[in-house]
Image 1 (cartoon, one colour):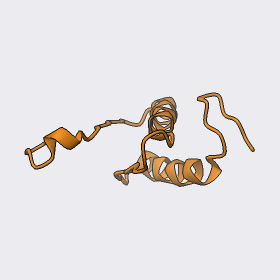
Image 2 (cartoon, rainbow, N blue to C red; image 1 turned 90 degrees about the vertical axis):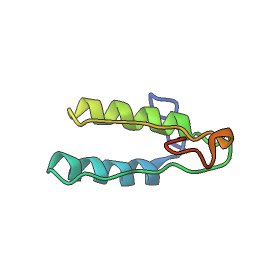
Image 3 (cartoon, rainbow, N blue to C red; image 1 turned 180 degrees about the vertical axis):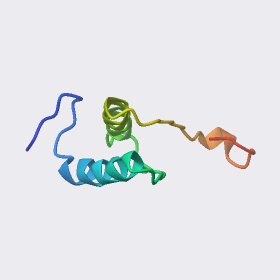
Length: 77
């Protein structure tokens, strides 16, 4: 199993999908990537890897985190 500097273990598929999205962003095609999983599955680590990768390519990166307490609130992400 691969281990990456950001602490990601075995995320080859996810890294490839995100990498393709970043390649397209570098060419001018934007996208939104949604990371959805149960608590403790590595969403934050994967998001931080994505941020680092985007910044290394000079691509804008924004992140939001949902909160169950804000469900139903406009812009309650």
